[in-house]
Image 1 (tube, rainbow, N blue to C red):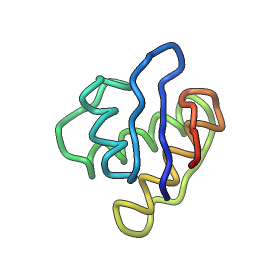
Image 2 (spheres, rainbow, N blue to C red; image 1 turned 45 degrees about the horizontal axis):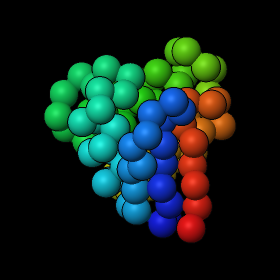
Image 3 (tube, rainbow, N blue to C red; image 1 turned 30 degrees about the vertical axis):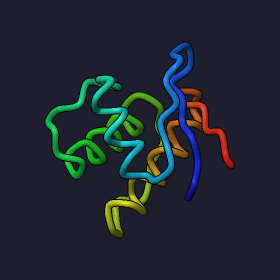
Length: 85
């Protein structure tokens, strides 16, 4: 995955790897990160997708795979803009 991500209405572009995107989203306070742990943040975002949007994502695999699934799911519900290279 080599993409840039943007929160709609914000000028910052986050990107390249799922881990870098997660780090940027945490720094911006996107969806109120519960901690500074990327693992916890991915779980938090997956929970937000489920409870707020009725979207379930695969919670198996390594951090990069789960982060990628969450990023694309957030884009599918209009919470992120994904700009692929």
